Amino acid sequence: MGRVRTGPTWRLALRAVSFACVLAMLLTPTAPAFADNGPASLPDFPIPNGHFYTQASGKGSNYGFSITDGSGANFNSEFLRLGGVDQLGYPASDRFVLDGFATQATQKALLQWRPDADHVAFVNVFDLFSERGLDPILARTRLIPPTPDNVADRGLTWPEVVARHLSILDQNPAIKKRYFSSPDPIDDFGLPQSSQDFGGVFVIRCERAAFQQWRIDTSFARAGDVTQVNAGDLAKEFGLIPPDATNPILASRQLISPLGQEFRADPGTAASAVQSASQARPSLVRIDVVLPDSTGIASGIVIDNGGDIMTNAHVVTDAMLIRVTFVNGNQSSAQVLGVDSGDDLALIRVPVSSIGSGIAPASIVGGAGLRPGQYLVAMGFSPYFPSPPSVRIGVFQQTIPTTPVIIQSDMYILPGDSGGMLLNTSGQVVGVNDEIRFTHEARQPLISFSIDALDALHIAQSLEQGR
Image 1: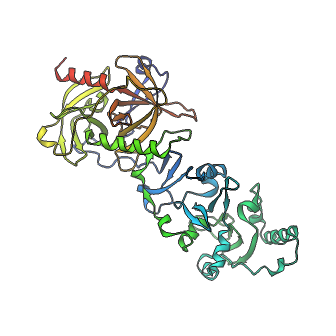
Image 2 (image 1 turned 90 degrees about the horizontal axis):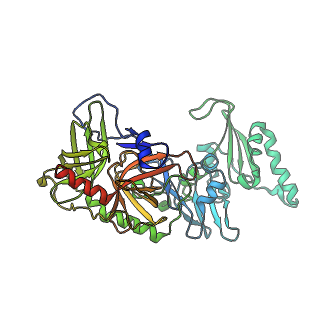
Image 3 (image 1 turned 45 degrees about the vertical axis):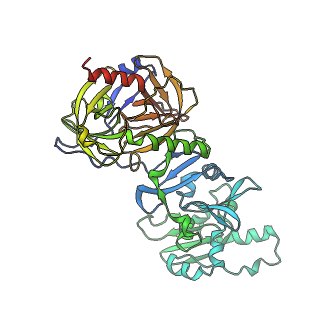
């Protein structure tokens, strides 16, 4: 469950225009059952210094490949400069070394970092197939013609060599048009090398790409369409990439950065964020609720050893049934001790006997000492991220001097994170995640609002005492 805001940033104005956004709910008929499976998780998301993609993992949305800047090679910046997913397909491997250079596969190409030029170059992947004796199997199984010996190039000037190879394109005007649709086709695709009519498809092979014009309808193209062969995927399939680099990594292990402009963080900062989340995780709970017409997922924070859990009021208001799941796997029904709808806070309780081992109250310090630009960490059970609870990193922007105080950040929190933790990098809770506002601005499409954790704790303690 979660709340989405629009309009000005001041809390009182926001209260006037905000609305509960039940994106994390499964809109099902009323039934006494919990939502164990939320909406499909995001297939890709930002991470520090780059982006994480699951689309080419071969294992679904729980696994994927990251493409990042850093460690002497700015692959993500180059990936975006060259057209990103639209031109290169999704990242399809981790980094590996090829001919002494850092290299990474996308579905359509192999990108190789060239430190002398400070940019990537496209690997002549189809030449590598020839060097490794793979042309016959490519022709037989993938309908890609072999490369000739090119003895006809001997004695020619470079312009004459280029003209001879480009003349191969004259055999198929549609492929020729696709080839020259690139502003620098020789750099992008290499020189054309060979062509062959396979009946249902006509193929022209280049050094770095291959193009097909289909004469029949297929599952991915219609008769007349021109498609580009996924050269990076072929390189994976035929063993040109080390096996370790082709093994996708768990999406749940990624540190998620703010939505919008690329988020830069050094390895030490990323490590401290992960450590902060690990330290605070025993105090985080998942909350499932049954409402009159739906079910929902949210988050909560253990505040004492007596079974008391703090969350948002909009999480439990009108709940017919509440179930808490601790990080040790123990589950229990919960009762509402008190709700402060005006400040959007609630206190719920589970029997102490249901908690089990490894659970501890959160260390709550509030946000009084925060400085603009300071790194923060968030955790919650939004089902939009893989294998929740997921860990987010962002920066503190400002406090909004209302009662209770509101902490504004650029954290990428979504419905389902309501009631979750906003942490400093020491694992201490500074805020209770409450609402989000979409701005429609590219630099920061989403602003997050959290209730100061000390203010929230005082309200929760008052609710316990019935005040």
